[in-house]
Length: 421
Image 1: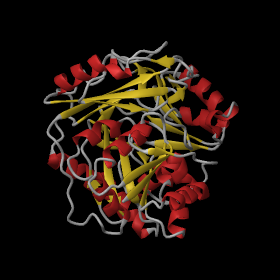
Image 2 (image 1 turned 180 degrees about the vertical axis):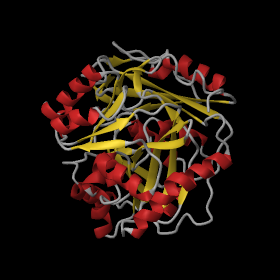
Image 3 (image 1 turned 45 degrees about the horizontal axis):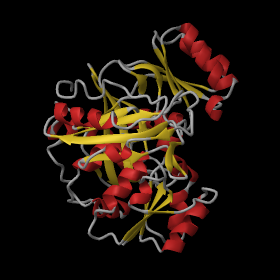
């Protein structure tokens, strides 16, 4: 089979790497891809990045399956365009992808479906948002409604920070949002639980945990993710089954009832509070950097799983097989990320990383013979180990071999992985 991957980040590199290992895959293509992806796939220009442009690329390479990595093409309707042309594609339609494309739609969906989440107020303008702040104690969570690459959420510690956030979102129009959510702040460990969905069934992937803040100790602004690990201590099969039954399966059932069946990955960003799990957010695609930690542990054929999920009911009686090993992924970020990433810094040491370590390219470009930084999150370094300490030690040793000016790397990724739940 010939597989096309839409996207050019670390998640897409992990997908290309894993799909290229399938015995059924003849060739992998990526649009636009990146220098790392080019080692396992043929990279093609993405044109204007529109759904029609991606359909044309799939036609040109005779793709048997297209896998959508990032959220923007999903929200723009790329799956709808492919289906209209009779082409197989993995991912939700634009209507189903609203679970990620609009935080307000998602919160209302959760409330209407009886799925536990934080208390919230929808504020259509700055004045309403300021009034909404009076309904919550600090810290308070403020979210831009639409897509914001993981950076549209601010946990405001006090009234001054909350007002500054509202100014940035609704007056300066950062992330082009006209409406914000104001939510109660919940306490507890966070959990990333992804499920493959075939329109009827939600099939759990292995649990993972990611780190959203830029600095050690979960300090500083939110990012797209500075690291991750899998599995998560204390979350065995019964606990995962209960979370799927409480969160993911009701979403799949309700979406089917609404006539917008959900195919693809339903990513539940959860917080495990003292009163039980609560949904922080939904994503409608593979997580980044969780995918980089999950796929090295997956024993099942990824192509088979994705093809099944693309078909109605295709996951019936199907199970995924996971390694018992631990995976730790570290993200190397560029200088000044997440505010204004510096680009063009030469990357050295990639050739020093030995076998058994997966280095995924996220924000890289080729400049002559050099690989240089071209985005905020530059590289992901993933190591496996029989325990979290072993995986963590191997990942950090490899990450220290790679250098570029201004490199940012948290030092506490997975530090408590064997103990927390």
